[in-house]
Length: 419
Image (tube, rainbow, N blue to C red; front, side, top):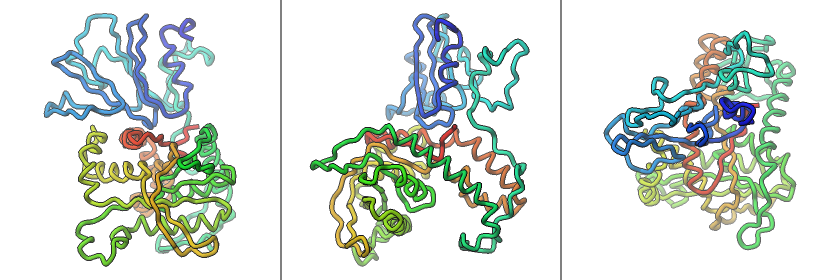
């Protein structure tokens, strides 16, 4: 392909790639450095220029050194572009920053098909370089395509699907989502090789799920069990943190970790046990004492860089300990008796973890989506969802990738299948 199109071959290659990636590629012949993340930002790539050394650093993770100079900090590489730095001429890197105005960088932006203006002389078989990077999905539109029925009253705190108004009219949408999401999960797990776990565990899980018991992760689990062979176990990792203030008032050590995500996690696990009684569901409770938070806080902060808010630290802590997979395996009394009889030390075997990121943005999982519906029904909600989907690439998937990868695990996102 390089021989056929020496100028634009990098764009043509990555214009056809669907999946997470981050790369830095040096074309020695042309003295050009190409670098980018995938268009949804699912893999980490950070940059930093060092004026004193006249150098540009490109890495999947920061080196832990920061400065007060705003122009010499690690930054998350924007995922909406593929960048090219021409080193053929003499240029000083000391004045560079990866931005729209930073010559001699050339940036090629991903665009929706509807936003591309093709030159008059560009054929469909030989498009121009500027039209190589076409997003493989369309924009969310606030206009209704089919005239779906209204959802139930916003006054209802709990909705039973059996009483859902006009459920039959919603069924095609439900079936379509299930079909697409099932295929997305299948694509992300079918190539994982079989492994043998510790202590000759012949049923060593290949896949784990970071499991809070929320709708996103329990949906992934319910569909995953339809895909994996019946003899394979599935690991569910549930994390809870000790609260020092609560420790002083709690009656037992277990009560310290009886937080909302632990309770919903157990409830979801038991639901899955009833859904597929032949499956071995390994529910792993990861209890994190405050002393461990203090011990690993500096390391996790370095992994988070350049993300540095309190919310980043909170989410980063949870992801790091959950993806580490070291906790207590919960054992039920029997398949028909959900009484917990023991919890014993366990270390997760799965190297691939499925995460539910992207579900809230696409399926209206935030409180602001309810507010948008209250303000203007389908049209207002569609506008809000459109903004959320457009911002996915600028959110924090790079941060999450750095955290999970530190534990030698790979994160995969079934809700973020692009095609």
